[in-house]
Amino acid sequence: MSTAVMTERIAEASPQFQARIAGVFYLLTFLAGGAALFIRGGLGLALVLIASVSYVAVTLLFYYIFKLVNRRLSLLAAVLSLMGCAIGVVTSLISPLVFFGFYCLLIGYLIFRSTFLPQILGVLMAFAGLGWLTFLWPPLANSLSPYNMVPGLVGEGALTLWLLVVGVKEQRWNEQATQLGTAIAAYKEQGKQISKHHL
Image 1 (cartoon, rainbow, N blue to C red):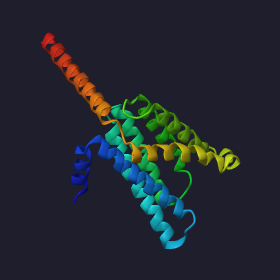
Image 2 (image 1 turned 45 degrees about the vertical axis):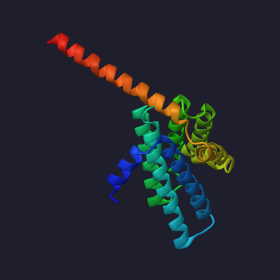
Image 3 (image 1 turned 90 degrees about the horizontal axis):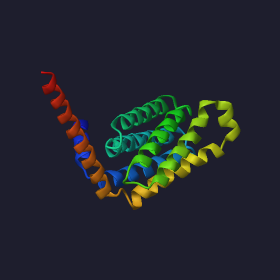
Image 4 (image 1 turned 120 degrees about the horizontal axis):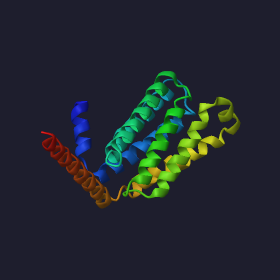
């Protein structure tokens, strides 16, 4: 199956299915990434790759889930996450956590503005982002280590569990999608009226 076909199928899936699959990939990211901390060599590298690919899947699914809240911010979050994944795989440096810090802040904001996930998850994800952003300044990160990892584990862990157990409130997601569609249609109609008026 080509990437384009797979992406199209993901986009067409129900938001509840997307949320549950995102939860599965998020859990896989935690498990593979955690195991990679203790296993070295070829197996450790394979676990890092599994964690990275899983996080890419989470990123793409989150883009589809949250683009109706704010398409630009959802896209920016996805780009930051994908950059962090790419840098992490190539260099294995801890600096990609900064990208995930900004990513978690944006996802936290999108969750908070959504109507289909609890706002507390948005607050926890923003908290996670602040923890990862301590890596902007290595002396600060080193002095706070390992406690600066706790916000990320709590925020992203809580979101993972929620997605696996509850998912999204699909009716609210559909209502928000309908409101967005209505607003876009009204905007286009207004543009047509202005064009006609100037002709």
